[in-house]
Image 1 (cartoon, rainbow, N blue to C red):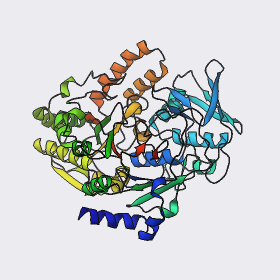
Image 2 (cartoon, rainbow, N blue to C red; image 1 turned 90 degrees about the vertical axis):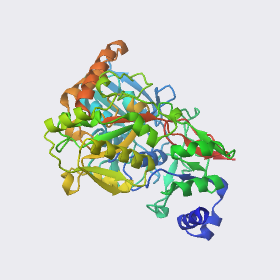
Image 3 (cartoon, helix red, strand yellow; image 1 turned 60 degrees about the vertical axis):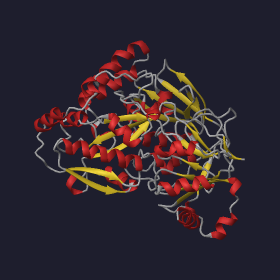
Image 4 (spheres, rainbow, N blue to C red; image 1 turned 120 degrees about the vertical axis):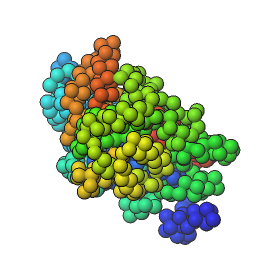
Length: 524
């Protein structure tokens, strides 16, 4: 039955049996992705699926290598002038957008300005930037108000980086979604074959000029070695597993973790860990409305979370998760301190009830958004709901698919009028491990990510950390940040775990880039 269902999905996705036969399977990489691509603008949303789409079609000025060092990507290089106050960046020659237009400094400047208005780390850089000025068609200056040693790290951040778009598109207001998808990256989005809820198609960009050095993490030569990449959205995980097992798809981007042991026993499938730091699960309260506009209610929520309960349900295999991680900036990273988390290592239901009362909670419904088509998120949401109900909280669970949730979570409406109180998501990698880059840690109020964490004192500490270039002097600042964060709680971590991918054994060149990228991959 599963094979019949998958055959129907495949036929629908490829436009019928004739279209399927016309495709050269050896030159097409078929990928089961974790979510439906619905939002195309990587500045407007932090959704993983949109970011992975963006990495296919856009390029970045700088990118991180496997040592987490920023390396030139679209940039040919840079000079640091005027005693560290000016970064002069020059673009590589020959860069072209998918519509044939040359990539100019004007495009980079407009893209940076739009991105800096919304991204957490971009906002930090904006606060110390006097201007960004075009010098000539290949050169521009970032002029700082004060010396700030994280310019290149900011431009190279792995998650939600500054993707370069044509100037006319990048001039779209940052709070308005971009719908045109013209980049300069190694693949081109094939809009006419896009079927939301089913399939997304990319074709190799024949005009892309990769860097000469080998691919390394997200840096180096992005060589498109297949003609097409086809994303298939298959909400039924058993159907997706059957498709991978039979060879009808090549790459399973986020297999449910309880499938891993079964997949490892199949000699035609390889399990690959592409992220050395792993994934952090988080509960995001809406800081705009009661009760979670009061830090005591957020502390109550933290007192209800037993991380191992979440991990047993979400992950299952103890080899893939930590029983407890109290680090906002990823356990195992250079910034992975856990100071301040001590009161929250074990649940305290009575303390949670007391704090909720102090925050003014009187039994009103708490709206929790439940993503029904993301198995791991759905499982974590159910654990959250049970934890809340154990403390006597009146929970209103509102079920929807993940794409709908992404739109819903951006609403600032009252929770009872199209808004929400709580939702669950994840993040990870070196971006999460860096205080100014951690998107969900950003507590800049109206300029924060959905949920709108608001703590000016915490934001000032993060800015202080970013200004300090001496690593030894940064450490006490980091610990002050962390203690404050466990009081303010921009979000509540519910565990850290590893999410491997699954590929067919004939797929080679998958990069350990921290997230799925599709250059350097070939089918043999």
